[in-house]
Amino acid sequence: MAATRDGGFLVKWTSIQELDPGRNRIRFRHVRGVTRGMDVEWIIEPGPNGTDVRIVHDFNPPWPPLIGPFVARYIVGDFIHNIAGKTLRRVKSLAEAEDSQARTDEVIAKTRA
Image 1 (cartoon, helix red, strand yellow):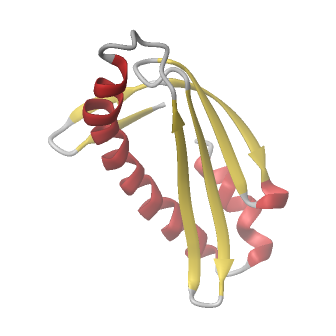
Image 2 (cartoon, rainbow, N blue to C red):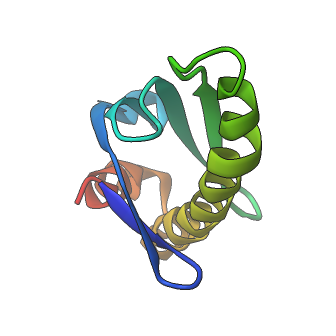
Image 3 (cartoon, one colour):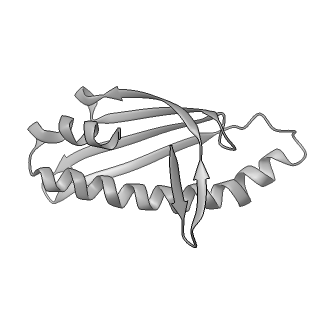
């Protein structure tokens, strides 16, 4: 996968994706790139006032203890926050465009691309 951070900075990673359309969830395990070791879950829940879309990150990188936590939180975390915000807005717009719970499975399939 890849994303562009504001300012045109390209970020790339490799993850294993697991779809769970019955629970309106997509899970990712990052296996390559600077985010290796991160688990991510996208939660897409239609509601009466629109669609609630959340992303949950669990990032425990296999880095040296002296610098790992600092770099993960203040450098990589800043990139993750920026990209996650864009992802949330896009997934929410796709989900709400579908206009019904019955179409949520299709929305999840569209985000795989």
